[in-house]
Image (tube, rainbow, N blue to C red; front, side):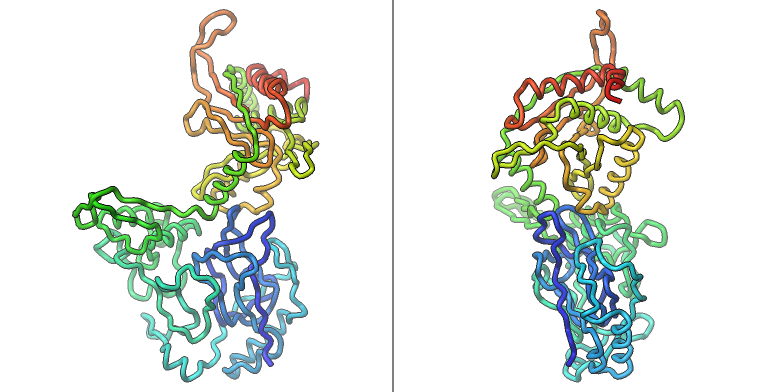
Length: 506
């Protein structure tokens, strides 16, 4: 008897309960090795590849791209062991069985289903197995000819408008290959985006990143109908945004997942009017939903208070310029502010803490794991610099750059987005002077930094133009009183105004 094992969406850690399928890395009929990545999913924290703990032949996939699945829901099934020889198809099935034996049986599966775990054995090259189709399936789903005259096997079910977003429906061999084409988007001459030649739908669509693919999917845009402006036809984010704007102008975004409700008086695509303005509903899910939940929890559970002060940052900027002029890697302003924060937390450890409401205790941490707010195309994320108190300005600069690049690429691991003990928020990059930050739950405080701009300032008894910055500290009033918070903020301001103060703690 064939042994078919079901692989379920694993627990990705850090309290994550669901994930969205971004891209399948295998198809029905492929031979997979133990711990080979089979699907790319996006959680509320990061985009990760999920490895399969079994080696064998993929017999079914569950969920289409764009579907959200809860942890524990089936992802795919794999036929393993010698039982694969009993599958229809003769030699092809024997080859699948041989590949499955070479990659491990069910007993040889690693069992490590968490992302980032598994054996170090390199995965074998993927091979497509095409066993013979039953007569009924063959008659119901004839193979579609491609541009080069070959037959394209119908090995998977692409979601239709009725089945999109419905988890738990497997894609099995013999289902008709009916690619979904959103109505009215991507057609030549209708959206202003040139269509691809016939047969271009065969093979992968060249897209610069999964984020661009997701943007197109959310707005019902068929990437196969586009020709990118990047090298070798690579589809860029600008190409997708241009197509969406062109489609919006012509009123042809029929496949857009957002719900547009036309009311009386609002202009319609045809120029008609109804009575009231249109309403757009944007679902709170993925990273946007996670941010909403965390901010709501922070406001609900933490009795926060904010204090702020203006500081003369002229000497800090001169110190940075002198450090960079001395040679070596450039030092960022954020790194200097982080170094000041870690020195201040050493003097005021009450703010490097959290509150255990169950035990009614304040938990103070000896190490500083510094989070910093980073704005990305996917939304606001807070990467964490581990052991920031043990790093110098050069090391902090390099780590900030690495985490920021990974955040913008959607490649941060869940472990790099959790475990922070204090957060630094540089909202000055948005051109604003001040803010009242919301604490990153369950931490106890957040330091906000506005833009550094020339302003009139009394310096040494005379009015002068100085580089001024506003610093604001939001803190959990349960862990300390205003005196501690004010002392922390005043020390930070003193270090900004006179960086030599830091020499006491170096």
